[in-house]
Image 1 (cartoon, helix red, strand yellow):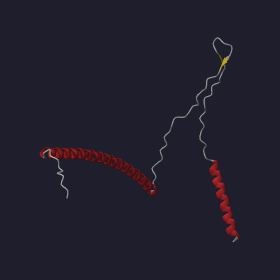
Image 2 (image 1 turned 30 degrees about the horizontal axis):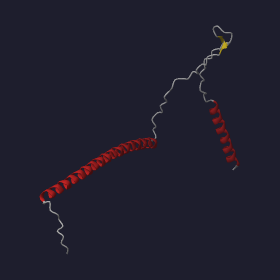
Image 3 (image 1 turned 30 degrees about the vertical axis):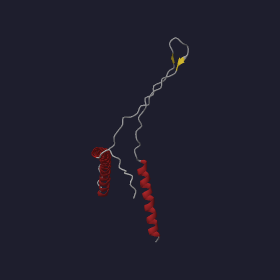
Length: 148
């Protein structure tokens, strides 16, 4: 039992030492030196007061687009494919919804126009029927004074 314990403790210490050595050998990212120019006080022309030094823009490195290699894990590929398919479905659904909304608005406007025209035609038909009835009947009063 003690030999197994000593073996396990020795293995643990060796593992820690190896991981510590690996962590120390990691390469730090190189720092880009910024160009620093000495700032001198300049005299304004025609005056005894010094001018303020001009502010310098810090040098920024150019933008780099990092591209990760395509994952070889099939589960990651499936997850990415599902995400892409879901995004495509949502875009299609949104477009269909907008198209349906436009069609509904057009149908509603057409229905309102038809109802408006039907009301106008109905009123014109009533007026024409009333004018025709008045033209055919003589101008005598309807009430003859008889009571029931």
